[in-house]
Length: 227
Image (cartoon, rainbow, N blue to C red):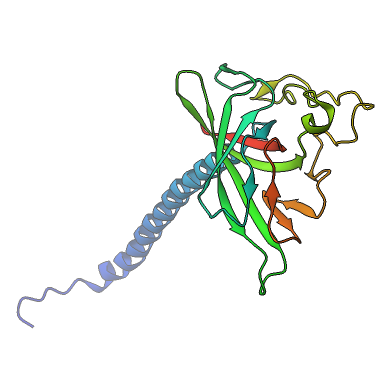
């Protein structure tokens, strides 16, 4: 055919294996490079995820306003205050009584279709002096009634446990002969001293018409802080 140049048979035979070797080497390099890059991304993503989910400590708060699942809806604010001073990872000292705010994650009263009522809470920030806020993720681990109602004193001492990043004073159980009201400790989990109320993963459940938490209710929070 015009314009067609035929390669000698012996050269054509040599070119075929040479072409195959070249393609194999190129494919191997490509796959190796791809695995290295992807592996690097995977390790970086895993490290970031672990850092983001690391809990930094626990501390307790006291509700400054009643909560009633019958009157609340998702997104409504939740107001509380620290029962003891804490020291943040930055070194900032937050005194007892500092405002801690959160929001309602779910609220449902008992109905014909649901025999129980629920109230979910998540805490979002701590107010610092000067109007600044520190973002947190605070999940409720335990809850107990306000010990002041029966004892007429603080009942629960300042602060909570010394952990890696959030440092506070230690918990005192308080005089055992003053009141039968249960007091929160670092090991407390669930609901103490409030009948017909349960707590699981930050959500309160009750068999009554609504979940009602009075002003002064104490809560132990597991807290992660934004970096």
